[in-house]
Length: 164
Image 1: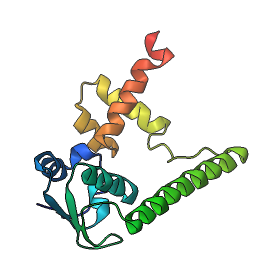
Image 2: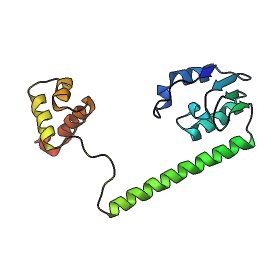
Image 3: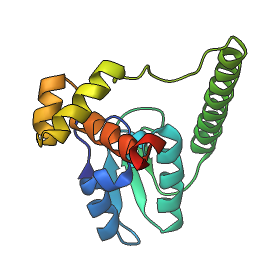
Image 4: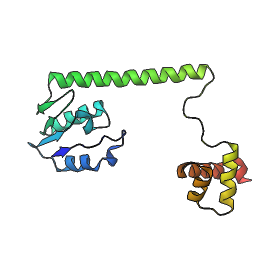
């Protein structure tokens, strides 16, 4: 079986039907072909962990490109080294992210994107909804996403002033 194609931006496994389908049909002694190890997960670390799980099930994996290129039926020194490096990289990214957010907080800044909806847009969204406009119409008129309109309306429903 061949699993590959355009690489999406780190979706959950549920959004990878070809991978899930392939994994559900694989049996002991089969050989799964993938473009790169990270196609087995959302990133290299998850891919290497999935690769190890396949070995434990008795499944071989043929990797066409990347760090683990070749045909594998069991763990090897190179795969163990790649797994250790991927875990180390993930820990490093996590540590740097936490340190950066902490430093920003000390300077009085809050991490994350700036809010899309200011007070004027919020008022416009609420007024349009009160007039009975659909969420899609509101989103197009205010030039925000449908999700932003949903979130704004939900926050307005749960605010203390909405209960009065």
